[in-house]
Image (tube, rainbow, N blue to C red; front, side, top):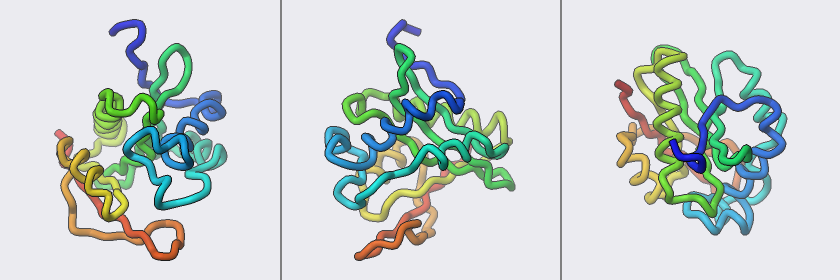
Length: 171
């Protein structure tokens, strides 16, 4: 590993004040438009808050992985055990100026490994906003396929948004 290659590890509460702004930049607001995976044109307001992130860290069936370089966070991914061999992958983000460099792919792979090792997962699912075809293709290249399931977006919006569920069998 080169000295500039990011380190990926399980996040701690001390990471959250610096990680939270990275998540917000990646998903919302004008800064997000520097990347390609944002929701800035679809949803306003914060993506998450530190209390929600802290709850992820405190839950025994969840982990938040953080990618850092030079001691500063540059991305993350959330893994949650859903039982019966299924884990959920979410909150994947890379700082917008660093997207398209392979870190997202690495975070997905690390999340899959963690899900299998810690939770015995044989399948991983995720949700993508319906209509975000570029994300469906991105995850498809990593083995995630549409399950045919469609879920309501967790925030009521006008017009409403929906999520499609993608699933991958883990080795």
